[in-house]
Length: 319
Length: 285
Image (cartoon, rainbow over the protein chains, first blue to last red):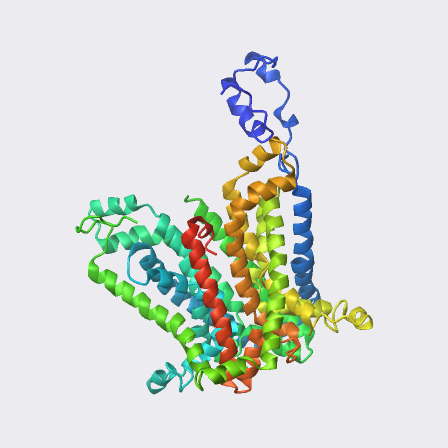
């Protein structure tokens, strides 16, 4: 390296410790001896907002992006917060924590958690089988995993409701066992398992595929049993991806509407999910109440988004 | 993959019985969760024979729903594709402050409940909303009309193309574009001849997923549509109405059409993944 790095990104952080390794270009008047007197590096300033780039179109594309994002997403989302803020904090709290709303949150969050946990087990299993084993129909199975992304939720909803109804293909076997699946909170969990499965599989799969075989081989050659290798080497490495997939499935499940309402039964206090409660308030022209519950759900969405981002930032440390 | 070429089992390979057990468990689970619902839709649609199903799917209301769904997707998908390209160009090809925040905000609609997505437009354009009176005075209908359905659809499918393109374009870097620019190509020409060929498969992948969601969206559209038969019913909403009226053959016949859409989407997606292995798997969808 015989050139002073003058690119605006390089100078500032490098200068204090590295000055004596520099050899200078001909047109520079500085020598290593006079380096102390050279102008303070802060004069080469990093632009506040954006680094210069040879590639044009930043202003236009950024302008379009921000305009559309604001008009379609950010301003409309603020409308719901403003609507909820039209009442006093005490009123807000009373509506947000009313008995019926609490029952709805409990069902939405509880069912989403159980479904995400079940998907956490079978999703990892599915990813493992897809990455590690060869078997007939593998391409088909792989394609099928994405079905919940492609199938409209209402279609999934009526199909699941028909299957798990007391006289349905699956329901008729559950009824003698005393399990009431459809029109019951169990039905909500079933619908959310369907909706959330691909999230876990598709976040775990790439990590499993990229996992280096040499670590596993090292564990095995050091005398670990296969079970020990899986439990102590492979599964911990999947941790961050698994948590991300779990959180994504959970977040999707909390807000899910289409697939759930057909199978849930929708009894207030019992099998009524939070998004449905918003719709019911809306149909009764209780806009402020609807907005209040929506704000609670939005807050949870933001929280989940932060958690997912934090997990991914944490995971990148291991790369 | 580490598949042993010889018959001997490697240290990172599982015994045959474990493989069969695990593969079997996955098959049973996926059959229960994914295949059975798919089969049930077609079985219920054909319960009274193929003719009854076709007749049900050709009712005027059903055809109007198909038309509205196609129209909505025809507006929402190209719109989000253009937005996705703009966002990806600004984010992936340039460096600026707050990039991570911007990406998070673009992803935001994914974590908002579809019902809330519908509600926000009701609060703005509905009768009681910000522009409610003004819209009424000028006889412009957005809520309980097609514009509201398109808006809600655009919202829920907003991130699909952008989140497919941003990581792809970030991975590809800027050197090819810089080379083109330094040799005197204009920005638009560079985009068209250098960037576009590099991202076309990723774009197609995003459009495919965006389209499936746009045609299938239920919750958000349900809030803004008003369920006016023949006018503001999309296919998923029409399925709901028929199902709630106990017209199961009709409901499942329309649902079967949507299933075909899903199957075609998955086939195209799989073909794309096999032909262009690098389009998938950068960010666990």
